[in-house]
Amino acid sequence: MGAGFTAEQEAVRDAARAFAQGELAAGAAERDAGEHIPAEIIEKVASLGFLGGVIPEEYGGAGLDYVSYALMLEELSKVDHSIACLASFPSGLCGGGIYRYGSEDLKQRYLKPFCQGEALGAAAVTEPGSGTDVAGMRTTCRRVDGGYLLQGSKMWISNLEHARWFITFARLVEGGERGGVCAFVVDRDSEGVGTAPVKDKLGFRPLSSGEVVFDDVFVPDENLVGEPEKGFAVAMAAVENGRLGVASRAVGVLAAVVDEVTEYARTRETFGNPIGTYQLVQSKVADMVVGLETARLLTYRLAELKDEGVERLRRESSLAKMHASDALMRASVDAAQIFGGYCASPEYAIGRHLRDAKIFQIVEGSNDLHKLLIAEDQLGLRSSERERKRAPAAA
Figure 1 (tube, rainbow, N blue to C red):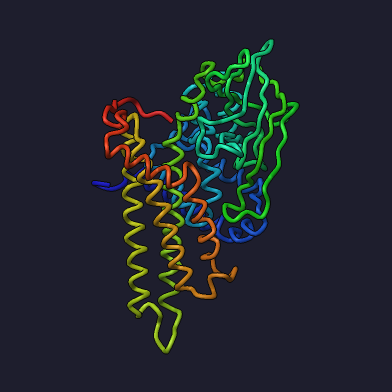
Figure 2: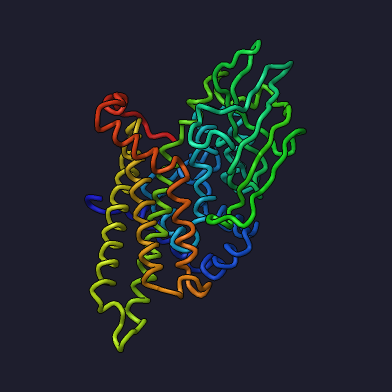
């Protein structure tokens, strides 16, 4: 990070840390067990400006720089990463596509209320049969008088419990032929919209997720985001923001794992000695620290580059997301081994971290995909990474 953080960045970090430790810590285990984020918590997150993220103030956002945004998510995630995940949505695909491609009307009707915590949204992209293959979506739309009719379904849609609207994507069908992808904002209470939450999930439990079904849902023309058949660009508009968010949150959870293991290894005794005095435990702790510090550096570097206005950061975002989540998974497995049977006890958070760690390796593109992207870039198979342009930073 060169000379370190600015006073403004430190202020954002400290505010997030104080809120997380003072307001979130006591109920984190309860929210995980109950698979629920209370509305009053969301109101507090919004009142502090954390929902606003990098979205400009004119649209209800906090206008943060990306480094401040990463620090904020990291501090919240040390206590409850599901709250941080919710806070990242307006700056990610859910709001970022609307900010970059949406009309002024869409920004005022959907993005601004989201940033202010008044009407939350969700991004409905992944489908039951396509998963990471976004381009293989089967949800379709067809033109009708005054708008479009949507038919299809999306799966693993986060924030299902609180979302009042969805930004979603469908292939245009004309005369039996499938064309390009269109992006839409769909109100949850539109006729034909159905939702089905998945309960008792492995990880990310407080953040409600599940299926969204569109059964001939009418969407007016004014709710089209961007140009017809240009929706894939909308989907990709904030993908790097999303990966920065995942990396930042993974770093936060990883920092919590390191702190909890450090305290446990200092106080837990076997054969008359603290377990931290044993070389095998020390080796695992050292690996955790190396993973944490390198994950932080990759994540902060990605945030710095976005603040510098670098337009495409596919390689850097894949590096940060993949490494941070992989480091978290390794550390969580080692932490469970150090805690022994106590990793299964709700008295400690290690079991929760281990369950969440696996999901971190899957969301925002599985790590298998990111490994492929990194290798293709290194081998020169993705020339766009070699032709970057500098432009003003956008959400």
